[in-house]
Amino acid sequence: MLIRSHRSGFDHPLSSEITSRSVYEGRRELLRLMGGGIAGVALATWGSRQAMAQGVTPTARPGKLAALPALRSSVAAASTLEQPTAYKDATTYNNFYEFGTDKADPAKNAHSLKTSPWTVEIEGLVKKPGRYALEDLLKLAAQEDRTYRLRCVEGWSMVIPWVGYSLSELIRRVEPLGGAKYVEFVTQADPKTMRFIDSPVLDWPYLEGLRMDEAMHPLTILSFGMYGEVLPNQNGAPVRLVVPWKYGFKSGKSLVKIRFTEQQPITAWNRAAAREYGFFSNVNPNVDHPRWSQAMERRIGEDGLFAKKRKTLMFNGYEAQVGQLYAGMDLKKFF
Image (cartoon, rainbow, N blue to C red; front, side, top):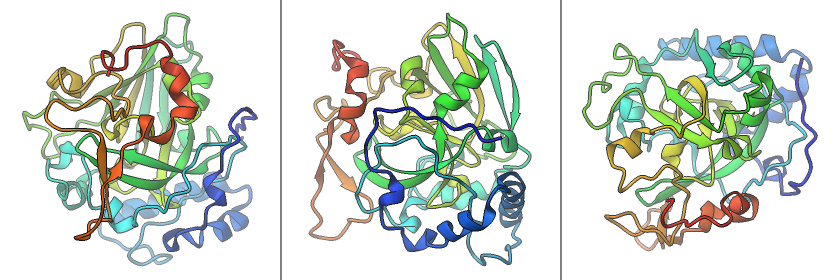
């Protein structure tokens, strides 16, 4: 059964209104044909994906990941109308330190990640804790396309068409208790498949967290795909968080636990360098990183000799949607 939401108040353009990129042109026809068979097709898709990881090319799409089944939900999202970053760039320039600290390392090394079977454990202050298989998560709510900007603290950005649904759908299902004020996200930490997990750069596993109202905001999504296809390993397969108004490191990848807590979580980068990486980590061009300015950014794919940097937008351009979450807060103190 697909759970559909009918919230109002977000009359922003859906990414389905944006001209499709060539990498996912066949997606609409797939949706028309799949009808009500989302569960079975989803399982087949993940099987094809695992075959790719083992070096077996699916016959349906040689050299590419199998298309991800998804349906557009009725939830309106503030998708950007900007041109998406090229798929090749978005999948070869990544931060995923479990697979190496160089931007090219994840694409080279993440093939070792085993994404099937996969479960996500829900624990902490909830009425319905439990362990969800990936297939169950896929069926919790209707998925939709959302094209979001992704801003990295190092000063570069991308525009990525994600596939997923609002995290709030999952949160409502597990029924948080009254004392649950924060949501903590735990990334996989498997030294057998993530060979840089012993690196001293961070304490593992990678931890991130959101305030409950941030986690419930409709722009925050659980993502299972991008560009109409299953998430590549280096981009956080098989399920990741996407919080578009925060710096990219807040969007935890390859999630294995979602924990509801009363106390603010100590996140990985805040633990490693509290002076540089605050808990909130909202995109704010008026607050410099201690070692560089955040006022400008470089859009990946616009790297020519005469390419100009872009001005960094407050809350990464989503101020109209999320600014009220921080009304009255000192955004230089709570950075």
